[in-house]
Image 1 (cartoon, rainbow, N blue to C red):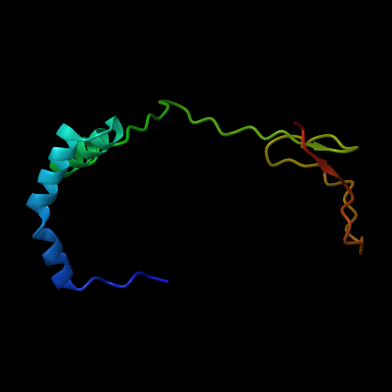
Image 2 (image 1 turned 90 degrees about the vertical axis):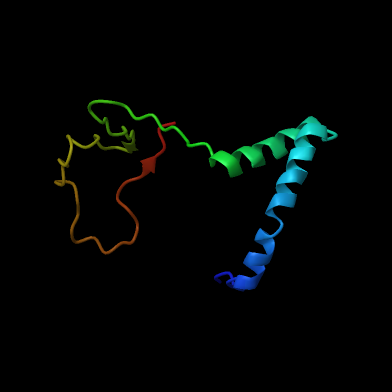
Length: 107
């Protein structure tokens, strides 16, 4: 369920307290009772003055290597290669809902 939009007058009213809120944060930063409150106030002031710190994401340069998936099919060999499967043992006429093989976790 989407949030209800705030009436524009509440937004303008809240902006009227900006200077007082910044002064309160600066006072907490300078005189707060705990380190946590001072750090939180300092962080809020910095984010309002300079924006939130960007998140750095490092990407590997060069060839992208796809993940390797290991699996075992009981009683059968693994697939022959990428996109190549031995379908000679598949029974196309089977009316059973039960699989003809069991997939086991390799871990």
